[in-house]
Image 1 (tube, helix red, strand yellow):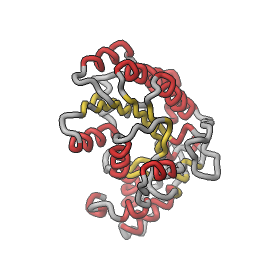
Image 2: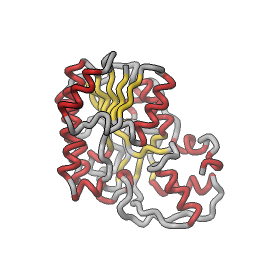
Image 3: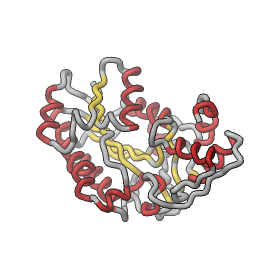
Length: 285
């Protein structure tokens, strides 16, 4: 049995749909209203009521607006640290493995190379620091844990997908309020494929996920413009963009994914290939 927390969000919805197809009748997906990480007593009680009890819990629940964490750190701590600790502890009591989704922003963003799992996180923002505390809470409360870090999740064509913002800018010629960070894109389809591999393993610790190759956000925009034969290439002007493009998180948001390749024997497709072969790209955009 697989429990997904935070199923009302982008990642949770995609995971629920994919895993329900792969593991019919073995997936329970809970929204924040149904399973609130901020209520530790109810959280444990609701998880105990599941029959059968989950053998794996995938935590997609998080507050993810970096600039908001600067002004409301207590609220972000309540969900992204204290809530994760409560969930991890409940998983340990139930004998459930915890797969906790995290972010490249636990790093400073000032390195010149993609970040490896063994590098010490050194976030300089409230958001990154709190997400790192969440990682530590997951690890401390449950030895049977795996922390998955990602850089830029895209390709689901839902609200919040960076590709949707890019296509609008390509159509209108408007600027994008993002900084031109170096990222490791991860297509939702490839994320789900990697997760299905992970569910068949007992890997623990930290694992970085992404498609092949890192790139600047502007390179993705340029490639989309080429594929869509658009003469309008939007400018990245900086501002209060989403996590992967926020100036406060440094210029480097790239992850080294060689550990996943080594453990799985699989090499994820290159990000350009993923963008180029996306089914019905022109029609969807």
